[in-house]
Image (cartoon, rainbow, N blue to C red; front, top):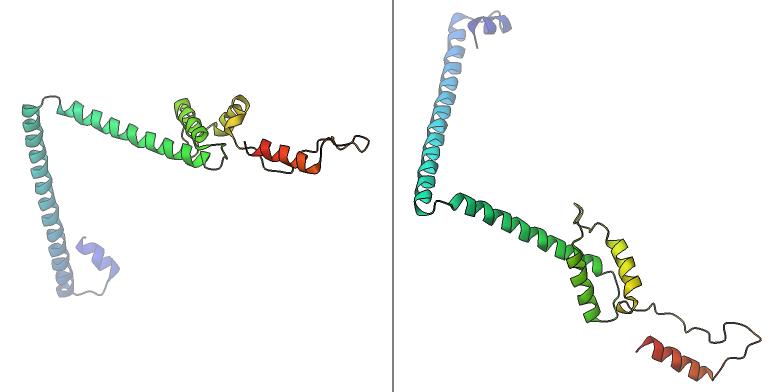
Length: 177
């Protein structure tokens, strides 16, 4: 800030008032410069400490940088695998399986397939995979519960075979094998 700038803003300012403003401004600038110098010294000291620590690590284990990078990549891969596993289990939670072992086999095959995990937490191509799995292994999924199939085909001229009890028993045995 210059004296001319202050006089331009406040034309009726006295020299004494102007000097007080300039002194306040100078002390404020001085404290900021001191803070900057202190922070620079701390930064330089931290850089020196880091360089010394890196030299010591190289003395103990010359390959520490590579090991650290490998460990970081391994951790990232484990996190990605966990996210994919959770996404697979969440997606399969909406499906009805005929047994717990069928669900376990489905999940194992799904994880082996390695579908891509999307940003929203879903698996890319999951619906197509389920459709092909249902086609290849329909017994793995629970049958839709419904009314028993009419044995006579709904034709009024055709008489049903067996009693209603026999028809229901056949349907029940078929549904709950």
